[in-house]
Image 1 (cartoon, helix red, strand yellow):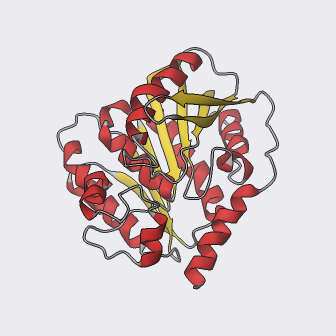
Image 2 (image 1 turned 135 degrees about the horizontal axis):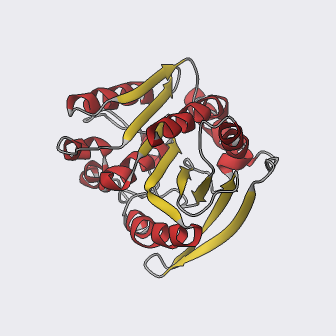
Length: 280
């Protein structure tokens, strides 16, 4: 019961007040109609530091029960990015924040549909053409369900990414038993009732061998609170070890903290600065 209250509190914090926009930052809210999904996906784009043609882009992925405003309203992503650009730890860049419901960012059955395919094949090309970003300077950072999504999305096509950040990622050591609460949070993304084979196919752990033969794999940044629930700290640590086993170094931070915005706000500057380092 305590875990459930903590989880719901983390979700509730996502409805905080609208962010204070940093100087020189432009935020645009729009929708992308997908015929494959049969619905529109809401999203935000944020220009930080007057980016020009060929600027980097960071996709920020929300968690379960959240939406496309979360990283701005509760995560202070604009203030974080602006401070890093001002300090020259990041170049001027674009943030892109899609809203995908509780889909887990995977291709799944109804009611979610082929979300991963639509994001990669349709949404990303559309938004990056509009923003004139450099596809070689692309990052994805997500929290909780979005941390799973960042790893899943990037490992589908790892050559497409320079940097992958997963904060409190909802990943579990292979073979883990799922509680009824966890199965409820999967929200039909892996079938209803839950289909273990569908989950195993999407599990980021399953795609790690694909990185072993890459000359230039993406940089990885993983973090989780020691007092998180569902064994997420153990899953995060195990994923870092699995990356090392295929020859891909990763920054792994298991720090004091919970599954909440206080932890994610503290970790986002570190993750985004690590992307700046990866850019060189």
